[in-house]
Image (cartoon, rainbow, N blue to C red; front, side, top):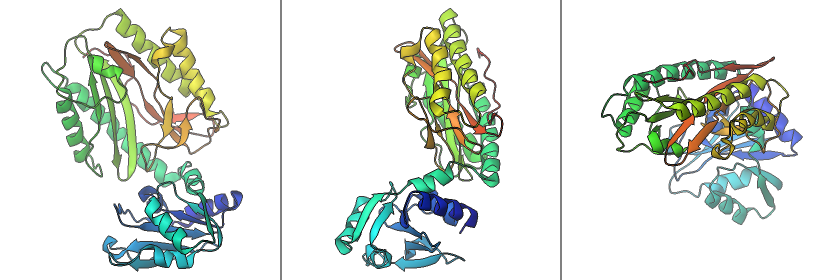
Length: 356
């Protein structure tokens, strides 16, 4: 067990009045134990008690071994996986991970009518918001790799190339740089397709005058990189430049206000007001960003609805965009690390207006 991380979780449990929680998300179990398990339909449940006792309930097929500070209770495919877990629970409130399948929770409640489930993800989620030095180093390294990958993708923009071909190239570049898994799901968007913030790359062929949105993300040694750059192919008109410069100014304005104590909603407002002043407010259709770490999207929520203050150690995205239906899209995204007196932008790839 990672004791310093466990101590933060235990303190959060105490503050939230929870004497026991079940942690089940793959990333959160890894965060505390170092075991990376994708259980699929099988049960994986880490029971943490306020007194510091930790027990991991896992299928023997996962191939796990005991470690100091962690009791390991195994079951087989022929067992009811909730039986031993139910025996270990205290009566009263049980904090339950938002990722735990309901079939296991129902199995516990059928056995233990004296247990009351409550949403219990916050103790671990709140701890994970603050990256420790090892995590920060991993995210810096992943972001620098992403800088190289996006430049490789931009250099491959040539006559006749398709979105899905660039996406395949990105996947290959990630594999060459130590990605943990296939980089499926990259967002490569030519011209009008860029007006859909989550367009999946297809057979569209690049044309002169297209905006090219490259939103590239993958886990590298477990920690995610996530960055977007937009360039223009062969030529750009006045509106292209106006839209791009509005988005770039919004990105820079948001990053300029980030410092400890500033609420996420104020960071969002700093970006959104720039785009509104440029006349494109209704075309900025999503929140400003999201936390990033062991999951690509994790707390904190960087949006107009979030009053969570920025604090040192947080890593989140800043990704304003303008999306003009049927015409083009522009998004510029960085990951930022909140420091003691501002923020460190983890991505170094150019944000200058570019025609390639």
